[in-house]
Image (cartoon, rainbow, N blue to C red; front, side, top):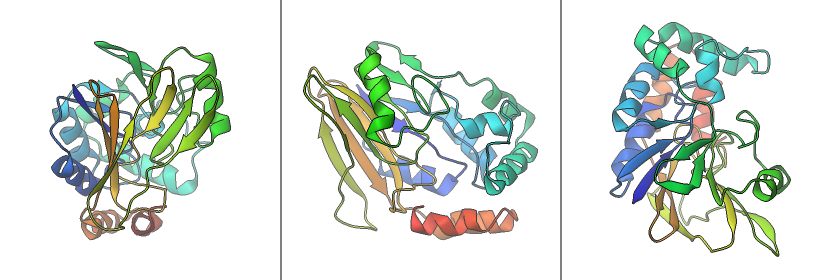
Length: 251
């Protein structure tokens, strides 16, 4: 089976559509949370995401936009976007986001795989460094965890003799590209497909991944998208301008 992995779309409709257009054929879609927040197309993105399938875990911005999470730990820009999103969402979409399950979520028919937004230990924790990843990699029995939250494409692994992090290396800054990772036996992985709608690894292109369960290969992808259209939506919504300008820098 080929599983399309989407995470941190953040209400960026243009980036989501570009990912779907660039994605190879897939059988299933798994969404790792933060469908909304920051971007200016929350209803359109929720509608599109719901139409792709029913496998979701909630993200912190999904919780914030629906009143399930206090905004005390959000910076002013993120809090402003969360409040704006809450006001924009239709009642149906608001209730749908509020009902999203907490991770980790087991993936039916694939007992070696789990889905989470932040960490398998705490859904809101950021797994940025190898130090962050060691506890779940070493103490939890799950061989493969797909996570989001950091907006950084790549991941971490551990086996009996070593542990390290990895990032896909691309050749261009503006073309569609993919990089493959062959999973090894007796190795545990935590893998982040990257952020669809707001990458923070210095690459402005939308990020996603495809997991081939039979070949045990994860294909990391980057897709250019209509950046100006996404930015113009943010400006037109009178959201903080930094939410638009940062998209071009991939930060």
